[in-house]
Length: 358
Image (cartoon, rainbow, N blue to C red):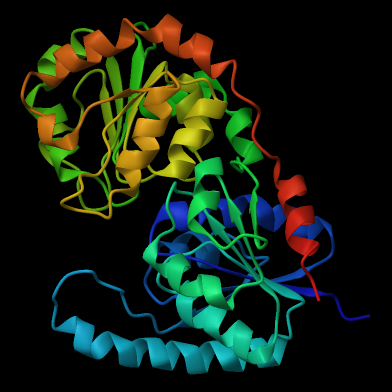
Protein backbone atom coordinates (compact mmCIF):
# COMPACT_ATOMS: atom_id res chain seq x y z
CA UNK A 1 0.00 0.00 0.00
CA UNK A 2 1.32 3.42 -0.96
CA UNK A 3 2.19 5.58 2.02
CA UNK A 4 0.44 8.96 2.46
CA UNK A 5 2.57 11.95 1.49
CA UNK A 6 3.20 15.15 3.45
CA UNK A 7 4.95 18.11 1.82
CA UNK A 8 6.82 20.63 3.98
CA UNK A 9 8.33 23.91 2.87
CA UNK A 10 10.10 26.94 4.31
CA UNK A 11 13.56 28.42 4.24
CA UNK A 12 15.95 31.32 4.17
CA UNK A 13 16.85 31.26 7.88
CA UNK A 14 17.06 28.60 10.56
CA UNK A 15 13.86 29.99 12.06
CA UNK A 16 11.98 28.99 8.91
CA UNK A 17 13.29 25.43 9.21
CA UNK A 18 13.44 24.48 12.91
CA UNK A 19 9.71 23.82 13.36
CA UNK A 20 9.74 21.56 10.30
CA UNK A 21 12.71 19.73 11.80
CA UNK A 22 10.70 19.12 14.96
CA UNK A 23 7.76 17.72 12.98
CA UNK A 24 9.66 15.40 10.62
CA UNK A 25 10.18 12.55 13.15
CA UNK A 26 6.49 12.59 14.07
CA UNK A 27 5.30 12.40 10.46
CA UNK A 28 7.81 9.61 9.91
CA UNK A 29 6.47 7.65 12.90
CA UNK A 30 2.95 8.04 11.50
CA UNK A 31 4.06 6.35 8.30
CA UNK A 32 4.16 9.41 6.04
CA UNK A 33 6.45 9.75 3.05
CA UNK A 34 7.99 13.15 3.69
CA UNK A 35 8.93 15.59 0.93
CA UNK A 36 10.43 19.06 1.36
CA UNK A 37 10.61 21.96 -1.08
CA UNK A 38 13.39 24.44 -0.46
CA UNK A 39 15.89 26.53 -2.37
CA UNK A 40 19.10 25.40 -4.06
CA UNK A 41 21.45 27.19 -1.67
CA UNK A 42 19.49 28.26 1.43
CA UNK A 43 20.18 26.98 4.93
CA UNK A 44 17.24 24.57 4.51
CA UNK A 45 19.31 22.66 1.93
CA UNK A 46 21.92 21.94 4.60
CA UNK A 47 19.56 21.34 7.53
CA UNK A 48 16.94 19.28 5.69
CA UNK A 49 18.48 18.13 2.41
CA UNK A 50 21.73 17.02 4.02
CA UNK A 51 20.59 16.46 7.59
CA UNK A 52 17.50 14.30 7.10
CA UNK A 53 18.12 11.40 4.69
CA UNK A 54 14.58 10.13 5.33
CA UNK A 55 13.19 13.25 3.61
CA UNK A 56 13.02 13.69 -0.17
CA UNK A 57 14.37 17.19 -0.81
CA UNK A 58 13.31 19.17 -3.90
CA UNK A 59 15.16 22.38 -4.78
CA UNK A 60 13.33 25.08 -6.75
CA UNK A 61 14.08 28.59 -7.96
CA UNK A 62 13.30 31.29 -5.42
CA UNK A 63 13.31 35.06 -5.66
CA UNK A 64 13.64 37.38 -2.70
CA UNK A 65 10.78 39.74 -1.88
CA UNK A 66 12.37 43.09 -1.07
CA UNK A 67 10.91 46.22 0.49
CA UNK A 68 13.78 48.31 -0.88
CA UNK A 69 15.00 49.20 -4.38
CA UNK A 70 17.26 46.66 -6.04
CA UNK A 71 17.88 45.75 -9.67
CA UNK A 72 17.11 42.17 -8.64
CA UNK A 73 13.50 43.27 -8.07
CA UNK A 74 13.20 43.23 -11.87
CA UNK A 75 14.62 39.73 -12.33
CA UNK A 76 13.42 37.86 -9.25
CA UNK A 77 9.76 37.72 -10.37
CA UNK A 78 10.97 35.46 -13.19
CA UNK A 79 12.70 33.25 -10.62
CA UNK A 80 9.45 33.07 -8.62
CA UNK A 81 7.62 32.16 -11.82
CA UNK A 82 10.13 29.39 -12.53
CA UNK A 83 9.74 28.19 -8.94
CA UNK A 84 5.97 28.09 -9.37
CA UNK A 85 6.27 25.87 -12.45
CA UNK A 86 8.70 23.59 -10.62
CA UNK A 87 6.48 23.41 -7.52
CA UNK A 88 3.45 22.56 -9.67
CA UNK A 89 5.32 19.66 -11.27
CA UNK A 90 6.46 18.33 -7.89
CA UNK A 91 3.01 18.54 -6.28
CA UNK A 92 1.32 16.87 -9.24
CA UNK A 93 3.88 14.06 -9.12
CA UNK A 94 3.92 13.27 -5.39
CA UNK A 95 0.24 14.12 -4.66
CA UNK A 96 0.54 15.20 -1.00
CA UNK A 97 -2.43 15.00 1.36
CA UNK A 98 -1.58 18.42 2.75
CA UNK A 99 1.21 21.02 2.62
CA UNK A 100 2.71 22.71 5.68
CA UNK A 101 4.54 25.97 5.08
CA UNK A 102 6.83 27.63 7.62
CA UNK A 103 7.33 30.75 5.53
CA UNK A 104 10.32 32.36 3.89
CA UNK A 105 10.57 33.40 0.27
CA UNK A 106 10.84 29.89 -1.13
CA UNK A 107 7.42 29.00 0.28
CA UNK A 108 5.49 31.53 -1.84
CA UNK A 109 5.50 29.60 -5.16
CA UNK A 110 4.75 26.40 -3.24
CA UNK A 111 1.63 27.86 -1.63
CA UNK A 112 0.48 29.29 -4.97
CA UNK A 113 0.98 25.88 -6.59
CA UNK A 114 -0.99 24.24 -3.77
CA UNK A 115 -3.93 26.52 -4.46
CA UNK A 116 -3.77 25.78 -8.19
CA UNK A 117 -3.72 22.02 -7.57
CA UNK A 118 -6.38 22.20 -4.83
CA UNK A 119 -4.12 20.67 -2.19
CA UNK A 120 -4.88 21.96 1.34
CA UNK A 121 -2.13 24.16 2.72
CA UNK A 122 -1.60 25.43 6.24
CA UNK A 123 1.03 27.98 7.19
CA UNK A 124 2.80 28.79 10.42
CA UNK A 125 3.78 32.27 11.65
CA UNK A 126 6.27 32.59 14.50
CA UNK A 127 6.42 36.37 14.89
CA UNK A 128 3.94 38.85 16.35
CA UNK A 129 3.10 40.21 12.89
CA UNK A 130 3.12 38.03 9.74
CA UNK A 131 6.18 38.19 7.52
CA UNK A 132 5.89 39.34 3.92
CA UNK A 133 5.96 35.80 2.52
CA UNK A 134 3.18 34.64 4.82
CA UNK A 135 1.15 37.77 4.08
CA UNK A 136 1.27 36.86 0.40
CA UNK A 137 0.43 33.23 1.18
CA UNK A 138 -2.54 33.92 3.45
CA UNK A 139 -5.21 34.34 0.72
CA UNK A 140 -4.21 30.97 -0.77
CA UNK A 141 -4.02 29.01 2.49
CA UNK A 142 -6.66 26.99 4.29
CA UNK A 143 -5.44 27.85 7.78
CA UNK A 144 -2.69 29.68 9.65
CA UNK A 145 -1.19 28.73 13.00
CA UNK A 146 0.41 31.44 15.14
CA UNK A 147 2.78 31.43 18.08
CA UNK A 148 1.58 34.71 19.60
CA UNK A 149 -2.04 35.37 20.56
CA UNK A 150 -1.68 38.96 19.30
CA UNK A 151 -0.99 37.71 15.78
CA UNK A 152 -4.65 36.73 15.45
CA UNK A 153 -5.40 40.47 15.12
CA UNK A 154 -3.44 40.53 11.83
CA UNK A 155 -4.90 37.46 10.09
CA UNK A 156 -8.35 36.59 8.74
CA UNK A 157 -10.86 35.47 11.36
CA UNK A 158 -12.12 31.91 11.09
CA UNK A 159 -8.94 30.51 9.52
CA UNK A 160 -6.44 31.12 12.29
CA UNK A 161 -5.42 29.29 15.47
CA UNK A 162 -2.88 30.29 18.10
CA UNK A 163 -0.97 27.04 18.52
CA UNK A 164 1.79 28.46 20.70
CA UNK A 165 5.47 27.67 20.34
CA UNK A 166 6.71 24.31 19.04
CA UNK A 167 9.93 23.13 20.66
CA UNK A 168 12.24 20.46 19.29
CA UNK A 169 12.27 17.64 21.89
CA UNK A 170 15.98 16.97 21.46
CA UNK A 171 16.77 20.35 23.01
CA UNK A 172 15.73 18.93 26.38
CA UNK A 173 18.22 16.05 26.06
CA UNK A 174 21.39 18.13 26.31
CA UNK A 175 24.11 17.12 28.76
CA UNK A 176 26.09 19.89 30.46
CA UNK A 177 29.28 17.86 30.77
CA UNK A 178 29.21 17.00 27.06
CA UNK A 179 28.53 20.64 26.15
CA UNK A 180 31.55 21.77 28.16
CA UNK A 181 33.65 19.11 26.43
CA UNK A 182 32.52 20.23 22.95
CA UNK A 183 33.26 23.85 23.84
CA UNK A 184 36.56 23.07 25.56
CA UNK A 185 35.47 24.89 28.73
CA UNK A 186 36.01 24.04 32.38
CA UNK A 187 32.68 25.32 33.64
CA UNK A 188 34.35 26.99 36.62
CA UNK A 189 32.86 30.35 35.58
CA UNK A 190 29.27 31.04 34.52
CA UNK A 191 28.90 30.10 30.86
CA UNK A 192 27.40 32.67 28.51
CA UNK A 193 26.16 31.50 25.11
CA UNK A 194 26.01 34.28 22.51
CA UNK A 195 23.84 33.62 19.48
CA UNK A 196 23.64 36.02 16.55
CA UNK A 197 21.28 33.88 14.48
CA UNK A 198 22.14 31.51 11.65
CA UNK A 199 23.56 34.38 9.59
CA UNK A 200 25.39 35.98 12.49
CA UNK A 201 25.38 39.55 13.78
CA UNK A 202 28.30 41.76 12.78
CA UNK A 203 27.38 44.32 15.44
CA UNK A 204 27.26 41.75 18.22
CA UNK A 205 30.37 39.91 17.03
CA UNK A 206 32.39 43.12 16.98
CA UNK A 207 31.17 44.27 20.39
CA UNK A 208 31.94 40.89 22.00
CA UNK A 209 35.44 40.69 20.57
CA UNK A 210 36.23 44.32 21.36
CA UNK A 211 35.53 43.76 25.07
CA UNK A 212 36.52 40.10 25.19
CA UNK A 213 39.18 40.27 27.90
CA UNK A 214 36.86 41.96 30.39
CA UNK A 215 33.98 39.64 29.56
CA UNK A 216 36.24 36.61 30.08
CA UNK A 217 37.17 37.87 33.55
CA UNK A 218 33.59 37.05 34.59
CA UNK A 219 32.36 34.43 32.11
CA UNK A 220 33.30 31.58 29.84
CA UNK A 221 31.85 32.18 26.37
CA UNK A 222 30.29 30.00 23.68
CA UNK A 223 29.99 32.28 20.65
CA UNK A 224 27.81 31.25 17.69
CA UNK A 225 28.97 33.93 15.28
CA UNK A 226 27.43 32.94 11.93
CA UNK A 227 28.77 31.47 8.73
CA UNK A 228 32.05 33.02 7.60
CA UNK A 229 32.45 35.04 10.82
CA UNK A 230 35.08 33.07 12.72
CA UNK A 231 38.05 35.13 13.95
CA UNK A 232 41.14 32.96 13.56
CA UNK A 233 43.20 35.27 15.79
CA UNK A 234 41.02 34.25 18.74
CA UNK A 235 41.47 30.51 18.33
CA UNK A 236 42.87 28.89 21.50
CA UNK A 237 41.78 31.85 23.65
CA UNK A 238 41.18 30.40 27.11
CA UNK A 239 37.51 30.47 28.12
CA UNK A 240 36.30 31.45 24.64
CA UNK A 241 35.10 29.13 21.90
CA UNK A 242 33.50 30.12 18.61
CA UNK A 243 31.37 28.25 16.10
CA UNK A 244 29.84 29.41 12.85
CA UNK A 245 26.63 27.48 13.45
CA UNK A 246 25.80 24.37 15.45
CA UNK A 247 23.14 21.73 14.76
CA UNK A 248 23.70 18.33 16.40
CA UNK A 249 25.67 19.66 19.37
CA UNK A 250 23.34 22.56 20.19
CA UNK A 251 21.35 20.78 22.96
CA UNK A 252 24.60 20.03 24.82
CA UNK A 253 25.94 23.57 24.37
CA UNK A 254 22.68 25.00 25.69
CA UNK A 255 22.77 22.62 28.64
CA UNK A 256 26.28 23.86 29.42
CA UNK A 257 25.16 27.51 29.34
CA UNK A 258 23.95 29.47 32.34
CA UNK A 259 22.90 32.62 30.43
CA UNK A 260 22.08 33.49 26.83
CA UNK A 261 22.55 36.58 24.70
CA UNK A 262 20.52 36.25 21.53
CA UNK A 263 18.83 37.86 18.61
CA UNK A 264 15.05 37.86 19.08
CA UNK A 265 13.82 35.45 16.44
CA UNK A 266 10.68 33.79 17.78
CA UNK A 267 11.88 30.19 17.61
CA UNK A 268 15.15 30.94 19.39
CA UNK A 269 13.64 32.89 22.25
CA UNK A 270 10.86 30.37 22.89
CA UNK A 271 13.47 27.60 22.95
CA UNK A 272 15.50 29.54 25.52
CA UNK A 273 12.32 30.13 27.51
CA UNK A 274 11.45 26.41 27.51
CA UNK A 275 14.98 25.65 28.77
CA UNK A 276 14.75 28.35 31.48
CA UNK A 277 17.78 30.23 30.21
CA UNK A 278 17.90 33.87 31.44
CA UNK A 279 18.25 35.89 28.26
CA UNK A 280 19.43 39.27 27.09
CA UNK A 281 17.85 39.96 23.70
CA UNK A 282 19.42 42.19 21.07
CA UNK A 283 16.78 42.38 18.32
CA UNK A 284 17.63 43.18 14.73
CA UNK A 285 17.06 46.91 14.29
CA UNK A 286 14.15 48.39 12.35
CA UNK A 287 16.67 49.81 9.87
CA UNK A 288 17.70 46.27 8.91
CA UNK A 289 14.35 44.48 9.16
CA UNK A 290 10.59 44.84 9.25
CA UNK A 291 10.78 45.16 13.05
CA UNK A 292 9.51 41.68 13.91
CA UNK A 293 12.34 40.94 16.33
CA UNK A 294 11.73 44.24 18.12
CA UNK A 295 8.10 43.25 18.71
CA UNK A 296 9.12 39.77 19.87
CA UNK A 297 11.67 41.19 22.32
CA UNK A 298 9.26 43.84 23.61
CA UNK A 299 6.66 41.17 24.33
CA UNK A 300 9.14 39.05 26.30
CA UNK A 301 10.38 42.12 28.17
CA UNK A 302 6.82 43.14 29.07
CA UNK A 303 6.28 39.74 30.71
CA UNK A 304 9.57 39.90 32.57
CA UNK A 305 10.99 36.98 30.59
CA UNK A 306 14.03 38.77 29.19
CA UNK A 307 16.07 41.94 29.27
CA UNK A 308 16.46 43.86 26.02
CA UNK A 309 19.36 45.86 24.60
CA UNK A 310 18.63 47.79 21.42
CA UNK A 311 21.07 47.10 18.62
CA UNK A 312 21.57 50.86 18.27
CA UNK A 313 22.76 50.97 21.90
CA UNK A 314 25.32 48.19 21.56
CA UNK A 315 28.72 49.75 22.19
CA UNK A 316 27.49 52.77 24.14
CA UNK A 317 29.05 51.13 27.17
CA UNK A 318 31.30 48.06 27.40
CA UNK A 319 29.42 44.86 26.72
CA UNK A 320 30.91 43.35 29.89
CA UNK A 321 28.97 45.92 31.93
CA UNK A 322 25.76 45.09 30.07
CA UNK A 323 26.26 41.40 30.83
CA UNK A 324 27.00 41.95 34.53
CA UNK A 325 23.90 44.13 34.89
CA UNK A 326 21.85 41.49 33.08
CA UNK A 327 22.84 38.54 35.30
CA UNK A 328 21.84 40.48 38.40
CA UNK A 329 18.25 39.95 37.22
CA UNK A 330 18.65 36.17 37.00
CA UNK A 331 16.31 35.30 39.87
CA UNK A 332 13.52 37.59 38.64
CA UNK A 333 13.78 36.26 35.08
CA UNK A 334 13.81 32.62 36.22
CA UNK A 335 10.80 33.17 38.47
CA UNK A 336 8.76 34.67 35.63
CA UNK A 337 9.80 31.94 33.19
CA UNK A 338 8.40 29.22 35.44
CA UNK A 339 4.97 30.87 35.38
CA UNK A 340 4.62 30.57 31.60
CA UNK A 341 2.58 27.78 30.00
CA UNK A 342 4.53 24.89 28.53
CA UNK A 343 4.92 24.88 24.73
CA UNK A 344 3.21 22.49 22.35
CA UNK A 345 4.95 19.21 21.66
CA UNK A 346 5.43 18.26 17.98
CA UNK A 347 2.87 15.42 18.23
CA UNK A 348 0.16 17.94 19.12
CA UNK A 349 1.14 20.20 16.24
CA UNK A 350 1.05 17.33 13.74
CA UNK A 351 -2.49 16.43 14.79
CA UNK A 352 -3.54 20.06 14.32
CA UNK A 353 -2.01 20.10 10.84
CA UNK A 354 -3.59 16.82 9.77
CA UNK A 355 -7.01 18.00 10.92
CA UNK A 356 -7.04 20.26 7.84
CA UNK A 357 -6.58 17.46 5.29
CA UNK A 358 -9.12 17.30 2.49
